[in-house]
Image (cartoon, rainbow, N blue to C red; front, side):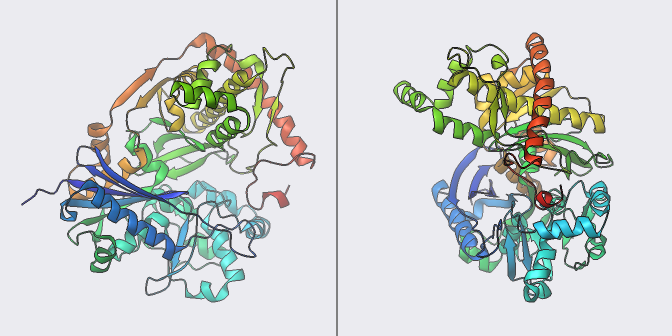
Length: 527
């Protein structure tokens, strides 16, 4: 009889669904991925609907394919878990059938955000102090929108969960949530790691729809007969509670202890710092605070908008020559750009990219995209110097967010774990070390979020004692970058200038002279 030795992670991201099989040593065995799209609902501006029927079909297909590609018997999968984009929610009726669902950045509830701010003065600040979340992408405004605009659907709502929880419910028949993902609804207590249902009743929303809360790694049950037929899984496989993508991704990077720090350099950049659950969020509401996947810990989180997407835009808009060079050399175009940018002096001739602001969670909007302080000297201002300025700016904004977190939490930062696509760049990694003044460590893992979900499955299956022990066993380090403190002096001065320039650029948005790159729902009507 073959010994069971595999763990399945299901990763429901914004742009795709993936099923990733690992062995119990953390080695990736197979992956199946399918892109999915979340369409704007007709007649509902800024909406982002989540199609449960179509997306479950894609999830089932990926699970089957991952098993087939691995060439294993489904009986050998000990356990599975799921992770997902945060903020996305699924609503169910009393029989557990899906009624309505939205993906993470659904922003249909601008009027409801405005209503809550105006008619419940001070309540957002009060709820933020408990939950670490503002109304911008929270569940309460969306539920209020449903009550106001789809009353017949709202009246049937009996349960709510996050999208990762929905996948586990489809597989096990059990609707539950965990603190790390459920906490992003904003209807949650950071300190108690439990729903704050009274928040819902305070604003006229049903308070009896919140499911049981399980910690990451707790077992919900086994794969149901129905799900087994749909997905090809065995009914002997355990279904284990997962969590939010950033928090489980942190676990997959070994960031599981108090005081540890990660910078996740993807399409957006997140700066996350592990703090005790008892630490209160900052009074200025500048930083988001989420429950971590480790009991007793929260994560203070700064977010930098579009850092990776801006790089892609710059590459595609201006770097056709580098694309040709990359093809000739057989390397990635970003490597070509970094090699050129290494020849540019530290500080990039004080070119200042104006894209994402540092995080101001309570009043979250950005200036119009631009470059400031350009030169008409082609030796000074060119693709290489502008590219380097973008790398430096992403690191500068990250460092500002980390300083905000240090200020309210009292955490003493010693090193940063840097992961995601940006961490592949040796120049970018060194710049992050130089700007922040902290040692930067790069892990070997390429699938941190999926690995984190596999870890949670392994905890439920008894393979690992805890997420902490799994991280210590599975995470391997690739490179380390030590900061250059002479460079840091240059970046410190540039950081001060950039912040002053950005404030001026925000005033242009305030005066309707330029258009904000992004603005939180409801904010544009309450300036």
